[in-house]
Length: 50
Length: 292
View 1 (cartoon, helix red, strand yellow):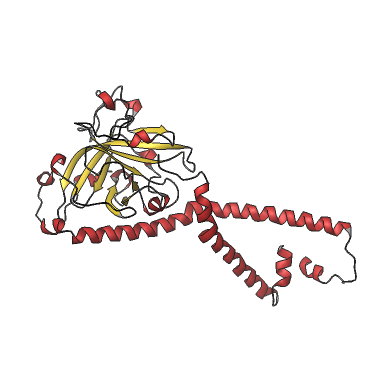
View 2: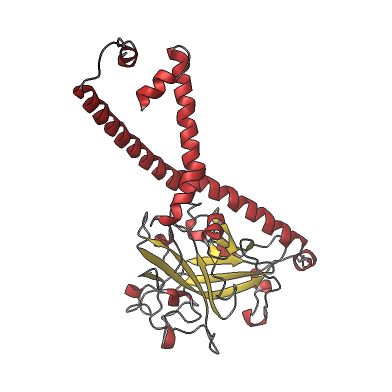
């Protein structure tokens, strides 16, 4: 998967590294703002009420 | 680099069985590593990121309640010089709430001086996940601050601003101060179960209005660990399965949060009793806020 992504990123190595970083941050943002908020109510970590 | 070498493999070369196995094994390995990183990111999210979001929501709720209070006639007209806090002491029986809490909006502030002078949270109405993300939430079916019965509040222990992370550190007689539009209500934590036996014989600071509970309250202690389904903790008389406030009921506060830390298998419950109340006045802060 990662090899495939690396091969398909355009530009020289330095640019590809920057692009990888941006991709990684995009994924993190997707997790933090969309996936985790959706997932959280199903997990037994912080329900505080009785 | 190995990646570029792969790219330069002559296209004439045929894929062998070994290549397929290698691809599959590498794919599985990368998938497992990715999942591991996602799980770690979830921990970061839960413990740190939701704290940031929660603090933001809490700040907005605080600004709103400050505006409401600033515009309420009562606090604006009652500007008196206070030499002695006793001048403002009120009889809670004669104080009726003049506000109407709205779900998801702040209507009171919670101070716990034992956690530091900067410990203050705006309490919102309601205990749904959206409400508790903003700050400690009032169980809508329970009484309001200062009233007979039980003013019950839930709060997150870890995540979403973590308002109730330190409830385990509260000791008996510690002050839990609630500010509403017109009043200050000073509650004090009830005796702990293990202190009841020698309560009377041990001198304690700030304990004048706190005593060992008797009658229908005899199983109510300062701190209790219970199961998540124990709703009776927030009823007017805790542990008594009735939503009616009996005549002569005490004025209690109940704080609930998850237990143990980082889990919600159980609930930690703090019970306190109203010790004193003051009417609000510009520039006046209850002396109890200075306790540490």
